[in-house]
Amino acid sequence: MKILHLFNWELKNIIDVLPKVEDQGFDAVLINPIQPLKEDGFNLWWLSYQPVGFKIGNQYGSKEDLERLCLIASEFNIKIFSDVICTHVAGSIDGSLNTHYKVDKELVNNPYFWKERRNIENWNDRYQVTNYCPGLPALDVRNYDLQDKVISFLNELIDCGVRGFRFDSAKNIALPEEGCDFFPRVLSNLKRDDIYSFGEVICSSDDLVNRYSRYLNVLTDNLMWSDKTVVYPESHDTYQGFE
Image 1 (cartoon, rainbow, N blue to C red):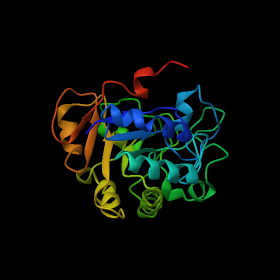
Image 2: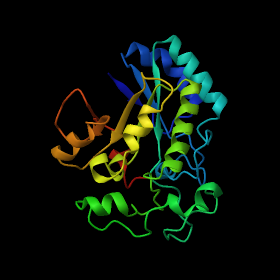
Image 3: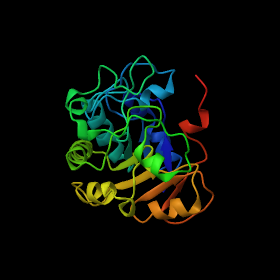
Image 4: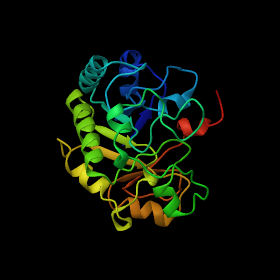
């Protein structure tokens, strides 16, 4: 499968290039996270990764825009995949691990939805990676009520016509053998069984990539190849540090 990452593109503009995308042999287009953001800013790529909840609609397009994109893309035999952020939310304007004031109050007010407010210091320590914060307030997706919110959101995207998901920061989500059944439970509760799901597991060992690939496809910068890996030549991570 060939996936074209149209990073920072508005949904309405993607429609205009679908004939060219088809001509170039791509099977799917990956769009930006479509969750509400703490603020707009097309030139600040990282703002796309600071959501405030699990709803559809932000500066890249509305729910109606997404439905139209998916419908027209299907006429070109192109699938629309959505980037999804379920591991963290936008941080406070003071740079602390407190939530931004725009974060959904249903999330903020549930103390069981959150990991310990402590930053990861050692990214090679699996306990820290799966239990602490990556510089932003981190959601504890072990919680079933929170998983149900994610499931509902993903199924709403599926109803719009989305046919695949990229799970951002997947390696921050513990695996079943580490005490979290997020991926098996969430993926088994999607409305369709033909959804192409892949999790971001970059800067990781062969062993960790293999462990995640037991549960879903794995997006990795690792050079190992298998029918469960999505290897990318370029993505938004290529441009970290640029504005």
